[in-house]
Image 1 (cartoon, rainbow, N blue to C red):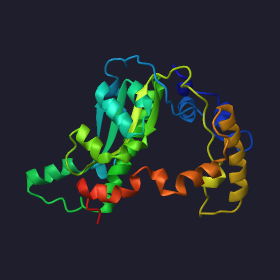
Image 2: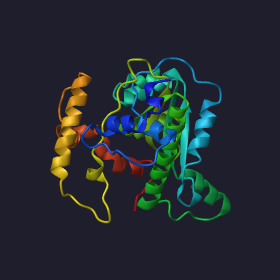
Image 3: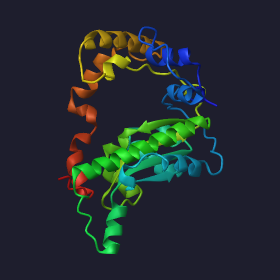
Image 4: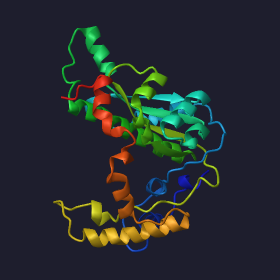
Length: 278
Protein backbone atom coordinates (compact mmCIF):
# COMPACT_ATOMS: atom_id res chain seq x y z
CA UNK A 1 0.00 0.00 0.00
CA UNK A 2 1.38 3.39 -0.99
CA UNK A 3 1.54 6.37 1.32
CA UNK A 4 -1.14 8.02 -0.78
CA UNK A 5 -3.60 5.47 0.56
CA UNK A 6 -2.87 5.87 4.27
CA UNK A 7 -5.51 7.58 6.40
CA UNK A 8 -3.54 10.02 8.55
CA UNK A 9 -4.57 11.37 11.97
CA UNK A 10 -6.49 14.64 11.73
CA UNK A 11 -3.80 17.07 12.89
CA UNK A 12 -1.12 15.42 10.78
CA UNK A 13 -3.29 15.25 7.65
CA UNK A 14 -4.32 18.90 7.92
CA UNK A 15 -0.76 20.01 8.65
CA UNK A 16 0.55 18.18 5.59
CA UNK A 17 -2.17 19.60 3.37
CA UNK A 18 -1.96 23.21 4.56
CA UNK A 19 1.38 23.59 6.32
CA UNK A 20 2.06 24.76 9.85
CA UNK A 21 0.61 28.28 9.65
CA UNK A 22 -2.80 27.82 8.03
CA UNK A 23 -3.79 24.33 9.14
CA UNK A 24 -7.36 24.06 10.53
CA UNK A 25 -7.33 22.38 13.94
CA UNK A 26 -10.89 21.27 14.61
CA UNK A 27 -13.87 19.66 12.91
CA UNK A 28 -15.57 16.29 12.37
CA UNK A 29 -13.24 13.51 11.26
CA UNK A 30 -13.13 9.89 10.20
CA UNK A 31 -10.91 7.57 8.18
CA UNK A 32 -12.62 8.49 4.91
CA UNK A 33 -11.78 12.18 5.38
CA UNK A 34 -8.26 11.25 6.41
CA UNK A 35 -7.76 9.13 3.30
CA UNK A 36 -9.05 11.89 1.01
CA UNK A 37 -6.68 14.43 2.57
CA UNK A 38 -3.82 11.97 2.10
CA UNK A 39 -4.15 12.07 -1.69
CA UNK A 40 -1.10 12.84 -3.76
CA UNK A 41 -0.36 12.44 -7.47
CA UNK A 42 1.94 9.52 -8.27
CA UNK A 43 4.12 9.45 -11.38
CA UNK A 44 6.06 6.20 -10.96
CA UNK A 45 4.34 2.81 -11.04
CA UNK A 46 5.18 -0.84 -10.55
CA UNK A 47 4.35 -3.18 -13.42
CA UNK A 48 2.29 -5.32 -11.04
CA UNK A 49 -1.11 -6.11 -12.53
CA UNK A 50 -4.26 -5.16 -10.68
CA UNK A 51 -6.51 -7.71 -8.96
CA UNK A 52 -9.25 -9.22 -11.08
CA UNK A 53 -12.38 -7.08 -11.42
CA UNK A 54 -10.65 -3.94 -10.11
CA UNK A 55 -11.94 -2.01 -13.12
CA UNK A 56 -15.50 -3.12 -12.44
CA UNK A 57 -15.27 -2.01 -8.81
CA UNK A 58 -13.85 1.38 -9.76
CA UNK A 59 -16.55 1.86 -12.38
CA UNK A 60 -19.26 1.05 -9.85
CA UNK A 61 -17.83 3.83 -7.70
CA UNK A 62 -17.63 6.16 -10.71
CA UNK A 63 -21.24 5.48 -11.68
CA UNK A 64 -22.31 6.23 -8.12
CA UNK A 65 -21.24 9.86 -8.54
CA UNK A 66 -23.82 12.56 -9.06
CA UNK A 67 -24.87 13.08 -12.67
CA UNK A 68 -26.88 16.06 -13.84
CA UNK A 69 -30.58 15.11 -14.22
CA UNK A 70 -29.43 11.47 -14.51
CA UNK A 71 -28.53 12.13 -18.16
CA UNK A 72 -25.21 10.27 -17.67
CA UNK A 73 -23.44 12.12 -20.47
CA UNK A 74 -20.02 10.64 -19.81
CA UNK A 75 -18.16 7.46 -20.72
CA UNK A 76 -14.71 6.03 -20.14
CA UNK A 77 -12.33 3.93 -22.22
CA UNK A 78 -9.82 1.71 -20.42
CA UNK A 79 -6.60 0.41 -21.87
CA UNK A 80 -3.88 -1.96 -20.74
CA UNK A 81 -2.35 -2.18 -24.22
CA UNK A 82 1.36 -1.21 -24.16
CA UNK A 83 1.26 0.22 -27.68
CA UNK A 84 -1.74 2.42 -26.98
CA UNK A 85 -0.20 3.61 -23.73
CA UNK A 86 3.02 4.43 -25.57
CA UNK A 87 1.07 6.51 -28.08
CA UNK A 88 -0.81 8.25 -25.28
CA UNK A 89 2.44 9.01 -23.47
CA UNK A 90 3.76 10.61 -26.65
CA UNK A 91 0.62 12.76 -26.95
CA UNK A 92 1.16 13.79 -23.34
CA UNK A 93 4.69 15.01 -23.99
CA UNK A 94 6.54 11.86 -22.95
CA UNK A 95 4.95 11.17 -19.56
CA UNK A 96 6.45 7.73 -18.91
CA UNK A 97 4.07 6.92 -16.06
CA UNK A 98 1.35 6.46 -18.68
CA UNK A 99 3.38 3.57 -20.08
CA UNK A 100 4.21 2.20 -16.62
CA UNK A 101 0.77 2.08 -15.04
CA UNK A 102 -1.12 -1.21 -15.50
CA UNK A 103 -4.43 0.57 -16.15
CA UNK A 104 -5.04 3.82 -18.00
CA UNK A 105 -8.48 5.39 -18.27
CA UNK A 106 -9.61 8.08 -20.69
CA UNK A 107 -12.64 9.95 -19.37
CA UNK A 108 -15.04 11.22 -21.99
CA UNK A 109 -17.65 13.91 -22.33
CA UNK A 110 -20.14 11.82 -24.30
CA UNK A 111 -23.18 13.33 -25.97
CA UNK A 112 -23.25 10.66 -28.67
CA UNK A 113 -25.15 8.06 -26.63
CA UNK A 114 -28.16 10.28 -26.10
CA UNK A 115 -27.90 11.49 -29.70
CA UNK A 116 -28.22 7.87 -30.85
CA UNK A 117 -31.12 7.38 -28.46
CA UNK A 118 -32.89 10.37 -30.03
CA UNK A 119 -32.27 9.07 -33.53
CA UNK A 120 -33.69 5.67 -32.60
CA UNK A 121 -36.79 7.24 -31.08
CA UNK A 122 -37.26 9.86 -33.78
CA UNK A 123 -36.66 12.79 -31.43
CA UNK A 124 -34.15 15.56 -32.15
CA UNK A 125 -31.85 16.13 -29.16
CA UNK A 126 -31.92 19.90 -29.54
CA UNK A 127 -29.78 20.68 -26.46
CA UNK A 128 -26.66 18.80 -27.62
CA UNK A 129 -25.11 21.66 -29.65
CA UNK A 130 -25.04 24.05 -26.69
CA UNK A 131 -22.13 24.99 -24.43
CA UNK A 132 -24.20 24.16 -21.35
CA UNK A 133 -24.67 20.55 -22.43
CA UNK A 134 -20.97 20.08 -23.16
CA UNK A 135 -20.12 21.65 -19.82
CA UNK A 136 -22.50 19.26 -18.05
CA UNK A 137 -20.83 16.31 -19.81
CA UNK A 138 -17.33 17.44 -18.81
CA UNK A 139 -18.44 18.01 -15.22
CA UNK A 140 -20.15 14.61 -15.08
CA UNK A 141 -16.94 12.96 -16.31
CA UNK A 142 -14.90 14.77 -13.65
CA UNK A 143 -17.29 13.81 -10.84
CA UNK A 144 -17.24 10.17 -11.93
CA UNK A 145 -13.45 10.14 -12.22
CA UNK A 146 -12.94 11.59 -8.76
CA UNK A 147 -15.19 8.91 -7.26
CA UNK A 148 -13.02 6.33 -9.01
CA UNK A 149 -9.86 7.96 -7.62
CA UNK A 150 -11.17 7.90 -4.05
CA UNK A 151 -12.17 4.25 -4.49
CA UNK A 152 -8.81 3.32 -6.03
CA UNK A 153 -6.83 4.96 -3.25
CA UNK A 154 -8.98 3.24 -0.62
CA UNK A 155 -7.90 -0.07 -2.23
CA UNK A 156 -4.20 0.73 -1.91
CA UNK A 157 -3.77 2.01 -5.46
CA UNK A 158 -2.28 5.30 -6.59
CA UNK A 159 -3.37 7.67 -9.33
CA UNK A 160 -2.53 10.74 -11.36
CA UNK A 161 -4.75 12.70 -13.72
CA UNK A 162 -3.44 13.41 -17.23
CA UNK A 163 -4.85 16.64 -18.63
CA UNK A 164 -2.48 16.35 -21.59
CA UNK A 165 -5.00 14.17 -23.43
CA UNK A 166 -6.25 17.57 -24.55
CA UNK A 167 -2.91 18.29 -26.26
CA UNK A 168 -4.22 16.29 -29.21
CA UNK A 169 -7.78 15.09 -28.56
CA UNK A 170 -8.30 14.19 -32.22
CA UNK A 171 -5.40 11.71 -32.05
CA UNK A 172 -6.82 10.26 -28.83
CA UNK A 173 -10.12 9.92 -30.67
CA UNK A 174 -8.41 7.99 -33.47
CA UNK A 175 -6.70 5.63 -31.02
CA UNK A 176 -9.99 4.70 -29.38
CA UNK A 177 -12.35 5.02 -32.36
CA UNK A 178 -14.36 7.76 -30.66
CA UNK A 179 -17.50 8.79 -32.57
CA UNK A 180 -18.57 12.37 -33.18
CA UNK A 181 -19.81 14.19 -30.07
CA UNK A 182 -17.34 12.38 -27.78
CA UNK A 183 -14.40 14.32 -26.32
CA UNK A 184 -11.49 13.06 -24.15
CA UNK A 185 -11.57 15.37 -21.12
CA UNK A 186 -8.54 13.85 -19.35
CA UNK A 187 -6.76 10.59 -18.65
CA UNK A 188 -6.04 8.77 -15.40
CA UNK A 189 -3.16 6.47 -14.44
CA UNK A 190 -3.99 3.77 -11.90
CA UNK A 191 -1.55 1.33 -10.33
CA UNK A 192 0.75 0.56 -7.43
CA UNK A 193 3.27 3.29 -6.66
CA UNK A 194 6.96 2.55 -6.58
CA UNK A 195 8.72 3.59 -3.39
CA UNK A 196 10.27 6.61 -5.10
CA UNK A 197 6.91 7.54 -6.59
CA UNK A 198 5.01 7.76 -3.31
CA UNK A 199 6.14 11.27 -2.51
CA UNK A 200 4.89 13.88 -0.09
CA UNK A 201 1.47 15.50 0.12
CA UNK A 202 1.56 18.78 -1.79
CA UNK A 203 0.32 21.80 0.18
CA UNK A 204 -2.72 23.73 -1.02
CA UNK A 205 -3.71 27.37 -0.75
CA UNK A 206 -4.98 28.35 2.71
CA UNK A 207 -8.73 27.88 3.04
CA UNK A 208 -9.41 31.64 3.49
CA UNK A 209 -7.94 32.21 0.02
CA UNK A 210 -10.55 30.02 -1.68
CA UNK A 211 -13.46 29.61 0.77
CA UNK A 212 -15.70 32.63 1.34
CA UNK A 213 -18.64 33.14 3.69
CA UNK A 214 -21.73 34.74 2.14
CA UNK A 215 -19.84 36.79 -0.48
CA UNK A 216 -16.63 36.73 -2.47
CA UNK A 217 -13.71 38.65 -0.99
CA UNK A 218 -10.06 39.45 -1.61
CA UNK A 219 -9.11 40.92 1.77
CA UNK A 220 -5.83 39.44 2.95
CA UNK A 221 -5.24 37.64 -0.34
CA UNK A 222 -1.69 38.89 -0.81
CA UNK A 223 -0.66 37.87 2.70
CA UNK A 224 -2.23 34.43 2.28
CA UNK A 225 -0.49 33.99 -1.05
CA UNK A 226 2.84 34.99 0.48
CA UNK A 227 2.38 32.36 3.18
CA UNK A 228 1.58 29.76 0.55
CA UNK A 229 4.54 30.80 -1.59
CA UNK A 230 6.77 30.04 1.39
CA UNK A 231 5.17 26.61 1.89
CA UNK A 232 5.53 25.70 -1.78
CA UNK A 233 9.09 26.98 -2.00
CA UNK A 234 10.04 24.76 0.95
CA UNK A 235 8.14 21.82 -0.58
CA UNK A 236 10.02 22.25 -3.86
CA UNK A 237 13.36 22.43 -2.06
CA UNK A 238 12.62 19.19 -0.18
CA UNK A 239 11.94 17.46 -3.48
CA UNK A 240 14.89 18.98 -5.31
CA UNK A 241 12.58 20.87 -7.64
CA UNK A 242 13.46 24.42 -8.68
CA UNK A 243 12.41 26.27 -5.54
CA UNK A 244 10.19 28.81 -7.26
CA UNK A 245 7.19 30.20 -5.46
CA UNK A 246 3.65 29.23 -6.42
CA UNK A 247 3.18 32.78 -7.72
CA UNK A 248 6.07 32.37 -10.15
CA UNK A 249 4.78 28.97 -11.27
CA UNK A 250 1.34 30.43 -12.03
CA UNK A 251 2.83 33.30 -14.00
CA UNK A 252 5.15 30.99 -15.93
CA UNK A 253 2.35 28.56 -16.78
CA UNK A 254 -0.48 31.00 -17.44
CA UNK A 255 1.43 34.05 -18.64
CA UNK A 256 2.25 32.65 -22.07
CA UNK A 257 0.30 30.65 -24.63
CA UNK A 258 3.10 28.12 -25.08
CA UNK A 259 2.13 26.74 -21.68
CA UNK A 260 -1.12 25.50 -23.22
CA UNK A 261 0.71 22.98 -25.44
CA UNK A 262 -1.71 23.42 -28.31
CA UNK A 263 -4.84 23.56 -26.18
CA UNK A 264 -5.42 27.19 -27.18
CA UNK A 265 -6.92 25.65 -30.34
CA UNK A 266 -9.49 23.55 -28.49
CA UNK A 267 -12.49 25.50 -29.73
CA UNK A 268 -11.83 24.54 -33.34
CA UNK A 269 -11.00 20.98 -32.27
CA UNK A 270 -14.29 20.70 -30.40
CA UNK A 271 -16.12 21.90 -33.49
CA UNK A 272 -14.39 19.25 -35.60
CA UNK A 273 -15.31 16.55 -33.06
CA UNK A 274 -19.01 17.33 -33.25
CA UNK A 275 -19.54 20.07 -30.66
CA UNK A 276 -20.88 23.31 -32.26
CA UNK A 277 -20.95 25.02 -28.83
CA UNK A 278 -23.64 27.61 -29.38
